[in-house]
Image (tube, rainbow, N blue to C red; front, side, top):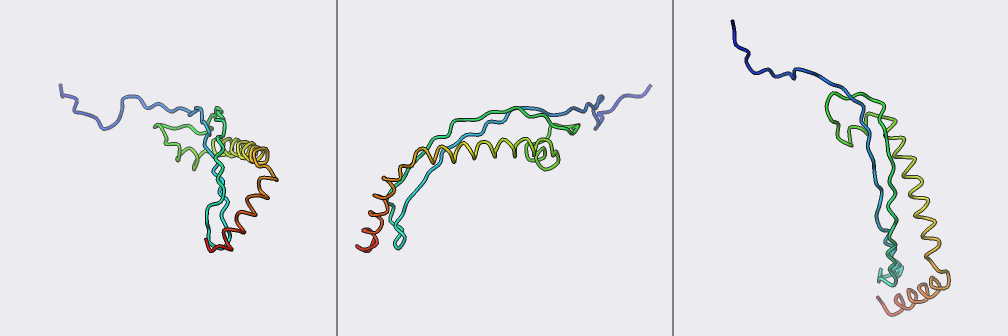
Length: 120
């Protein structure tokens, strides 16, 4: 009888749908600079609360795909991430609106004008 030589193909090919969890997080950094010289007048760093969500793909894969492959080829993954990003951005913008004080911005605007007058 012959001898089995190493095969390039796996004995069993399985295919599976991918699912997982994604966490969106980060910081917003807002800078106010004088318009003429770009002198930094004010800076605010706002930490964004992490937002996690589960996703499940619609495609069947024979190998473990990269996240990029999932986003490019699987519309269900792409659409899920897009919807969650919209929610995350909305929360971030609402947080900015809560964190910025109009009276403080008036002071910042005055400081910017003074910085431009003195030449940066």
